Length: 76
Image 1 (cartoon, helix red, strand yellow):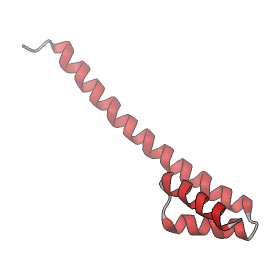
Image 2 (image 1 turned 60 degrees about the vertical axis):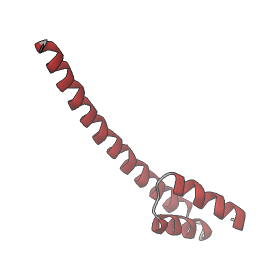
Image 3 (image 1 turned 180 degrees about the horizontal axis):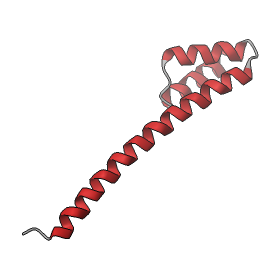
Image 4 (image 1 turned 135 degrees about the horizontal axis):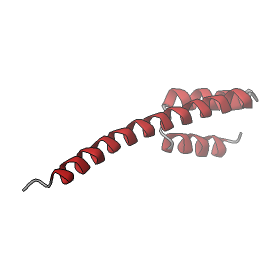
């Protein structure tokens, strides 16, 4: 990768919430032409983000249920 490509990749990974350690490992793997391992790192990070998203959705669902319950009681 060129220096510019490395910078752009690092910026993209930062925007995706990757730690500096993960970014360095990812770029190092790409420079060693170990694409498969680099892609595994991205897949792992993606799974982590998705797990957190699902956890937050469960919390929202709990709040929605509470609001529904309160509305059904028709409190004054």
